[in-house]
Amino acid sequence: MTRNLIGSLVSSASKLTDLDDRLGVFFVFQDLSIRTEGNFCLKFSFADLSAEENQECGTLLTGVTRIEADVFSRPFAVYTAKKFPGMIESTPLSRRFAKQGIKIPVRKDGSKSSRKAESEE
Figure 1 (cartoon, one colour):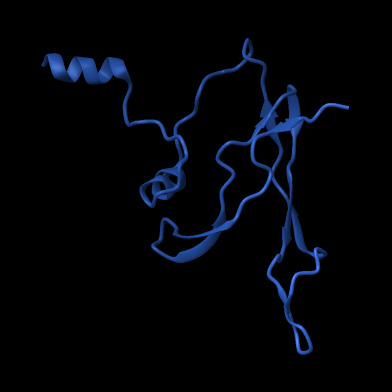
Figure 2: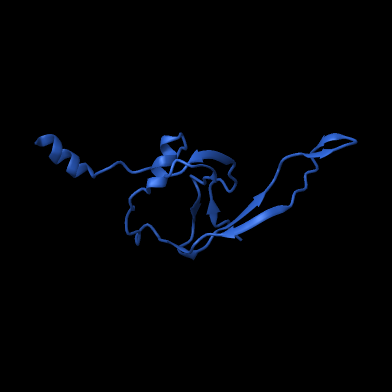
């Protein structure tokens, strides 16, 4: 059996503002990739890993937690390098998170050729 997901499979909560300037809690998986070509959905599980309060012992880390919620992503396609159709534009939300310090790759506005044409004018 081979692991199909590569990268960080766990994410901590980040307090960020969305496109409407509303504060929210987001989980960003900036380096997750899939080894195999095909169509996939990802399952995300939310677990509260905080220590439990116990009246007799104080704060107690039990090493056991329960899943609070599960959600599935929308289906998406994974391509081989040969069949890859090319990068899509970075989303406005991705750009917003990057401006708030989240380390995610975002594409710069405009292509190299259009910037070169502008500089020659």
